Image (tube, rainbow, N blue to C red; front, side, top):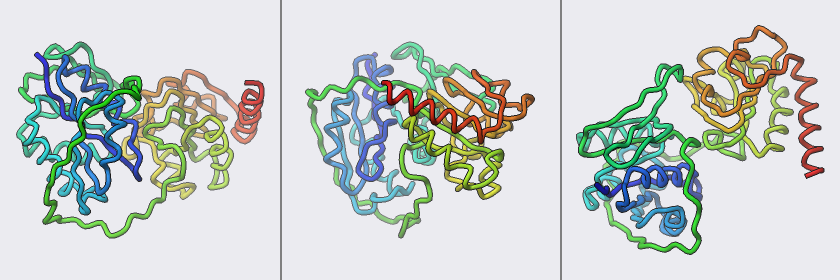
Length: 325
């Protein structure tokens, strides 16, 4: 049975996040040929609709209001619910991002629906679809099949591949007027402490540093390596606690959960709290001078050595590869 699927797209500073396209791909798999309607919320987002259609959405519905310039659960829930009530979908897909993790339970409660969160893979299609998600901090996986009439899932970024972009694809882009009001939270200013560059949660390469980097300056060669690889920089909680870097870079159970194609852990022991946030990376490389470090137990490749010698060698090797490419 075909389903109309409502997909929440996310934009940051006027640019659509990759998880928006991944959510459309997930929606295609569960829709069984049904309609994919993408939802965009913000103050000026109308111009972004065409790209969502090029990545597989059939229609785009926007809600623009000055109170949606910055995310608040009250504002976004009002905007999303207005579109939900208009469209009456059979399924909803959101990204399992900071925004999605906050908003999805609120929406699920409002519409009295079950929620399958943090989906990393979808098996099958339509009513036979099964949703795979990690449990116990990534130590095991469960396969979920729902009996709910309304299917509601969030997908982990960087796990479900987006559809190929079709620049010639077209579709309807409409707007809904919503009076977003009575916000209990008002954001007057946003101070960004995260480093510039690639978003760690969506990066295909992440270079992470731990206490072994010995200080803030120890992150500089890691940043150089990450930039050369087109990746993002991350950190363990130990490095953040030691004030080597900002907590916005923390990977782990109480930080960000990432699944890059390549994770390089530098001077990280492999504490369970950190491993919970990166153990599902496709390829794990560990650099540590302690051959008994826990991180080597999950690493695909391990380098036992002084990181201050190994990382510069890696940087030079990557540079040479780029020259010869």
